[in-house]
Image (cartoon, rainbow, N blue to C red; front, side, top):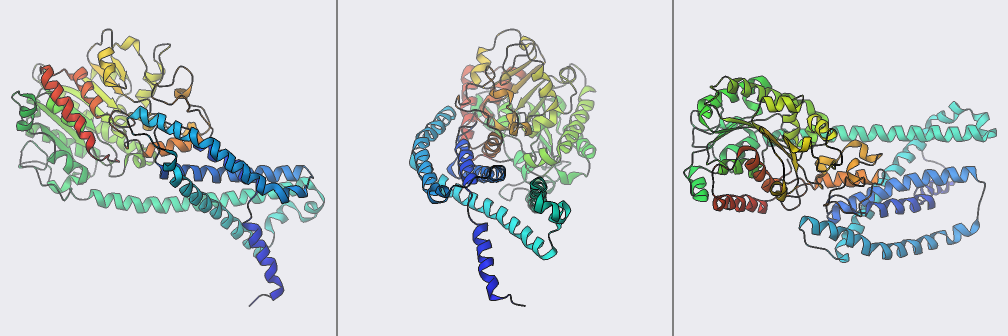
Amino acid sequence: MSEHPNHLPKRLTRWAEAFRLDYGGVLIGLVFLALSLTPSLLPRPQVAQGVISGLSFALGYGVGVLLWYVLRRLISWRDPALARWGWPVLGIVIVTGAVILAPFVVAWQNGIRTTVGLPTITGYSWFLLLVVAFGIAVIAIAFGRGLRLAYQAAERRSGPLVRRVAGDEAREHERGVNVATDATSLAVVVLIVAVVLWGVAAVGLQFLDRGWSESNAHPDPDLTAPTSSLRSGGPGSLVRWDELGFAGSEIVASGPDAEAIEALTNQSAKEPIRVYVGLESAPTYAERAAIAVNELQHTGAADRSVLVVAGTTGTGWLDPQAIDSVEYLHGGDTALVALQYDDKPSWRSRVFNPEEAAEGASAQFYSVYAWWSGLPVDHRPALVVYGLSLGSYAMQSAFPDLETLLARSDGAVFAGTPARTGLWDGLTARRDPGSPVTLPTLDHGRQARWFSDPADFTNATGEWDSPRVAYLQHGNDPVVWLSGSIFWQRPEWLEDGQRSPVVSPDMHWIPVVTGLQALIDFTMGTAVPDDSGHKYGSLTLEAWIAVTGDGGLSDQSLSAIRATIASYDSLPPVDQ
């Protein structure tokens, strides 16, 4: 049934009112946008910065609307001049602020880019930022307005339920109840928004999970099964090629062989052993770990000089720079064993299923340890633990404390350890007085040490007893420093005396905004040159030398290995 024509102007008025911007919202939104342009841990591309600036404006707009509403309810003040001159004055403020702020923004970003070795930018490079920020802000505000309109339409059709709850008569005569009614309406809208966003996120995550699982289901089609019996998936292997998954196939089908190692080091070399067990090989962690141990026995790993128990990232990936460098260093006289715990990216596993990586790594290590500890003490390889990112978290979860790690291994290398990792947290909290959280010293470096730059190994002093544990962490690695509390609490690594020299002195903690910046940095952690952000390739080589020895190689051979590992950085960064 059509509505009466006289009702049309009222409807148009409602829609016009719904899309009218609010003075307070715009003003506070601009403040939030300006704050989002302040420097963070890593340089941000224009699109990424545009996204965070747009979201920051939308968040500030919502806060400003609420504050402006409360102010108008508490103060009975109306000024006709505001309606006439408000927007022109605000426009002048916006243009003036943009002109003043632009040079600072460019200088802030160039300071960060110089620190990580990226070329500088000009102000013209940030035009795309404004376009993206505007689009994101419009979408976010429109989404909120749409939900509000839907709520109002439902309320008109079903009756003023919320108002009845507060009491119609009191609402008409008591300002306090009126405010309570409005607050209740706001709470209902917020609840609806939360439910809708949660539903959209859940559906989207399920869709992504299916895609990730399908990507992992088969080996990399550009690779072929190994021809060496010392690789999983090769001749006589207990693991079939089609069970390795995408990441596993890359690990066993790549890396240096004996001939490549000899050519680089001018020393005789062996064919490295690489054992990998994917998700498809067995349904449980214990069964996959048992297969891995049988594979170590089958390949003769007991006769090697170094056995690396490696924790994989979320998709089952291992850093090629890290695993290749230890093989070059020890002339291929090595065995590597890794298990796949999941087929999702590390952030997905860390947030939603951290127990899978922890349980999988524990099953992996202790199965290998039980076999290794049964070998003759004078005829078994050095047992070394390694992990990057989620792999570092997973492997450290296998040890309740440092003493257990030292008692059951011959050393460890942990790179880019995520925040809230139990062992790392505990050791950092116990650091020597006066040492910064970004590069701690524990017991004067007697057994566990932290490094952020290759030069740190050369500059290290004092006795470093064996077994040795090396923690690699950059001061600008968002994976290491991002935690939920950063949204409402200033992190320790930004306090005076704790800040890393690679973090911009212009970076300051801003509630909520710094959290959003860190989330964007998190996604850009590998989009930087080597040995910055979340990339530890060359630094891992130095850690292997410190923890496992230099393999008796000459300075010339070590330099050749360093140059080769550094060249890997020309490869595209991989988000694992």
